[in-house]
Image (cartoon, rainbow, N blue to C red):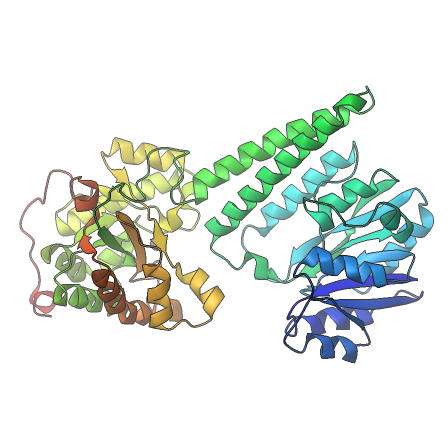
Length: 503
Ligand SMILES: [Zn+2]
């Protein structure tokens, strides 16, 4: 008998698919499904019962590990399989688990892998790193990359080790497998895969990387602590394993440190980046990325003019070619124009291409508008050694931001946010010297839903009013950082066409 334990807190949306897939298992033996309801206020419990699951209510403590423990305590199978409500299980999942345990008595736990239902672009890289990590560590001991959504163990082993209780790190993954490995083998089966929702990764990439960085740092600390603890048991037999773990820790640290440098808008790993100004004065710089993009850029300029405020626009070369008059208007009205690359390629920073692309935009802006921007902002805030070298060579500086209610994030959290919510998310992040990221465009696109920046246009007056009430005054990025706006000043006359000047 196998007991599948699923912790659930308000999972009415995703739970039906999960339970349906667990009902459809081709495993011939007996199995039960236990849903440990961790205090849901929606229909989670009813849905679970409809699918024939046993529902155990446990709301004393809001925690996945606690729910997993309560579910496991109620299990009657000799094998317990951990599952997740946002995950779908191939029909051979249970059969594979049962067969492995039956044929290998020395095995106490089996783990597998997950794939995302909707894969982000970097998923392939993640899958590779996971498999690589498990392949290396499996040579010496238990795998390190455990998916909590697909992990099964023998109940006697689990119980004799006190379950998840007292585990302080990654209780339902590394924590429990480390514990179980004292009683037998923990194996990794790459074919024991499950399909998990991508809700964990529907965030801006830099947030994912920041979380990952924190996660990996905790893992490195955990590994070091474990090794110190076992130092007195040092033998030649344990040496290769510990050497491998140490090397892997260093590798992981180097990779995540570089990722942090690449993705995090304020990380100085590859060179100096200006994300805000250190000041006590209540000044703030509003910046707009990805324009010009009509009609929104013009509408934003109208709002700024009505409030007598200047801002900084990081423009894309292709968009300048499309809307040269709007770009001219930005300069003519005293706002500042910065370089945001020529083509806004998502992977611009991975190769030397990014450096060429930003140089090309300097040329485009200079030829079209007669100015050479001093400020560069990389697309998505991703930074690389090539780009930082290029901006040094061109005599520019790199500017990112300290505040953003970045659109992807705000849409993920709030669905369709109102201007009030959007303004609140921005204003609450502003400190003296802040650089605020807003968008008047969406890459080089102009006619799809994402390029529709009417929300920004509606939100801007609220942001301005609320910050004014708090005592803030508005400056351009060059004023904030006390640097020039353009290299060599504004060169030549700026012919502003009548259509742009008369707005
Ligand atoms: Zn951008």
